[in-house]
Amino acid sequence: MTTVNNFTDKISNEDAASLPAIEFGGEIRIIDQERDIAEACKILAAEPMIGFDTETRPSFRPGVTFRVSLLQLSTPRVCYLFRLNKIPLAKPIIQLLENKQVMKIGADVAGDLRSLHQIRHFRDAGFIDLQSIAPQWGIGEKSLRKLSAIVLGQRVSKAQRLSNWEATTLTDKQQLYAATDAWVCIRIYETLLRTPKKPLRP
Image (cartoon, rainbow, N blue to C red; front, side):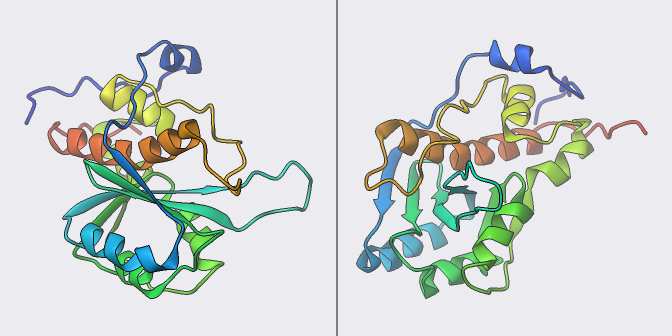
């Protein structure tokens, strides 16, 4: 455990953008065949903690929305990208999302779960939302970008956020972006746990 908490309450977009980039350096595995789902979920279920995020194809027309395209679940070493526009939200994935023994760390977890519930109902358990717990360390920011900047001193790229997540093939940049978003949640959470709390002043 570190002895001091030097986290700032807020950080400007400019200051966050000036920080060095952070990127997932592990293996990325794309799951776009139903036959590969069970094995991936078995490996993930053996982990005590995984990073969690989703991506949805952006809509540039009012009133038009798309279902969630991608579910990212990451260990510290391997990130699985489940292409939900090509495979079902199958039982092994649901069992993982309902497993309270596997901690799933994300940012804006409620929004991601809402998107997944539109595909299939399940009883989510074992989720930790960085947005909800950050104030215990005196952090007032909510976005994953700014949480990473404050806690890790590194910026997460936003470059691929509005790309087409239902493309026939995900580009290397899309894969790296998606994997980083899930994996960095583990890094942020582990760093918070090693740091003394310092609640926000009202």
